Structures are given as structure tokens and as C-alpha cells.
Length: 325
Image (cartoon, rainbow, N blue to C red; front, top):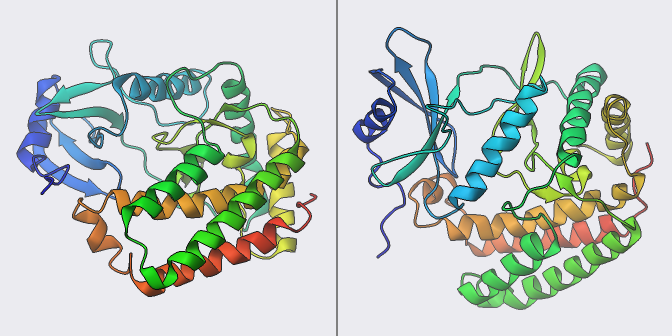
């Protein structure tokens, strides 16, 4: 049986890891919300608390993590409110006890009020600045977010896994086939794309709000892809509501970076890819005890029936005309 990925990451190991890079933890350690990695807030003697992120073993190479760090530091140097890792002796990626980790300053905040047009415009301004910086360089080690990485590959993995119950396998296979055909059609409608460096996972949980405005956290999923990937997760509700929200975001965004309106054809396609990728993500993490505890309904017949219904709804959504702000 495969050992759980964080079975050796005890509180003592976490505190000793901080001490190994010259910090002096005072023994206080609070677990913060994260499924993919393990993230803690640690009290530090004679200083403010620090946040330490232990990376999931074998998910990223050192080069890929360092590219994430370099992008965050580049954005911070441009005075964009991104929470970047703190270098120690010139290094941002450290290792201790078989785990790789990085230290971040603690930054508090609350969820942004996405129903407020001014909030969306404010977030849009900073996303425009992030994308202006992202378009000015390239990732060499971080992967792309595309149909292959978030559609074809996870679908093939799930089909090989044997996790989908036999009585819904044919329906799920058909739904994913039709959904990915529709995704490819959306990409064709979008026309020529210019992928850029992205935050990659810009949902409201990764945007913390203070009286001074937003700051962006967790670039763990930064990739190369279409700019709309960082916009669509800020949209919700019916078509009219999403159109208004998109207009508000773009009002701020386009003050700093041009937006290719052809990418609006990808909004429902990106949502569809995320749904397929999400199922495979949970399945691949099942040996981590945090996942069965958080997703006890995963793998049931009802779970897969709901995913089939979602995909059928997405096929219909992708057949509609793109939003026009």
C-alpha cells in the first residue's frame, strides 16, 4: 500500500524545517486550508508569524516550483499585490526531512464582494497588470493549460482507472466525448490565441480583500494559457449577470492590458475542462487521507450521474453564443 504523501510531516518536522533555514519558531503551528499542499501558520520568536507551504511530493519539479516563485517575485517587484515567497540566503525553495517548502509572509483578508461592480473593476485592474507582466515573458518549465492537459489526459486516466461504475461508464464516456468535441469547437471559434503566463487558479478563494484592495495568493497552478482562464471564475449567475460582471472586470482590465475578445468563446470550454480535470484530481489524490475525509461522496454512482448531467449542461452552454460585454 502506498504511504500517504504527508505521513512523515509531523508538527515537529514542520517546526524543525523552519529552524533549518534560520527562523526561530515559538512552537505555535496552525493548519491553514489547503488540499493540494500542506500549509501552516507558524509563530516566530521576536517577529510576525510566517506561513510555510510544504509542496506535495512529486507533483512539480524543482525547476517548475522555482519558476512559480520567480513569477510571483516578478509581479511583486512591479508592485502588483501578489504574495510572493520570502528568500532565505538567496533561496526561495528549501528542503527538510524529504519535503520541499517555501516561506511566505502572512497576509490576511476576506472574500471579495464579487456582486459589487467596483470590486470587480478593481480586481480587473490588477489582473490586467498581472497579464501585462505575464505576456512580457515565458514559462520554460511550467506546463500549459489546454485541451490535452485538462481534457484528454484526465479523461483517459479516469477511463483506465476502473473507478467509474460499469452502469454509468458508457454514459460518462459519451458525455465526455461530446463535451471535448464542443470544447474543440469553441477553440476553433476563438481563433488565433496568444497564450501568456497566468495565475491559473484565480477563483475568489485566491483573492483576499482588505480596505486597501485585493491581493492574490497561491500561484501553485500558474501555467501558460489564454487570458480568459483568469477571468471566468469570477463570473457566476445567469447570462445577464455574468455579462454585467464581465463588463466590470474588463473595465479595469483593459486599462492595463488588451483583451482578445475572441477568447470569450472559451469561457464555457474552460469551465468544462475544469470539471473533467477536477474528477481526475480527486481520484489521483485518494491515497491522501485528507481527500476521502473532504470528498466522501466521490466515486459513488450518484457522483458520476451528477457529473454526466453537468457535462450535458455544458455541451448546451458551449453551443450558445459567447458573452458580449
